[in-house]
Image (cartoon, rainbow, N blue to C red):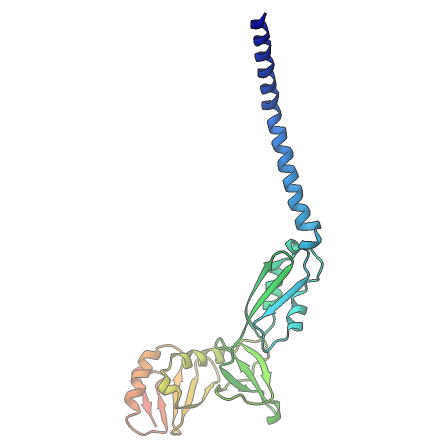
Length: 246
């Protein structure tokens, strides 16, 4: 009799094990579904995960209000739904912005880090003297206007560009400026570029250097150094193989 009881008990145990094995996939699916549902609820429905603040960093020329207006994000939306790429592109479209980074700061904050363009040259706005100057960055982008002339910037004489435009002549002149050694830069009163291939500058001694395009700068510097051993009003190194003085 005891043998039959043990056999029946073993049979029941095996049957329970089979039922558990067959139920395991459904149980796992239920657990996963519950977890996913919880994550979705937290991300989309929980008030703790909704955008409540936007922090703007790195601005000086732009105001926080200008950046927020360009970002076009409203508070109260789930943070996970904020289109970070679109926000980045909209803020980057502001003329004074060189670079921008947008990050979600969980659980409910958006951080916009702006790197503004840095002025390296001024261009007369044209017309009356009271119109001030346009500021250019190192790439030749006209990104701001100033009613006064800031100190410490290159006086660049090119056709006045509109704000937001990139001046090809200005970009060429600034490439030349970047290639010149500091001791030559210190001697420059102003640079001029009517076209990208017609860059020139005036030295403190009153002489004019006709540089031409932004190419062959190393050779032009060597020729200019040799020519400047003699006094002249014009040093033309635009074609360094046939450089002349006048």
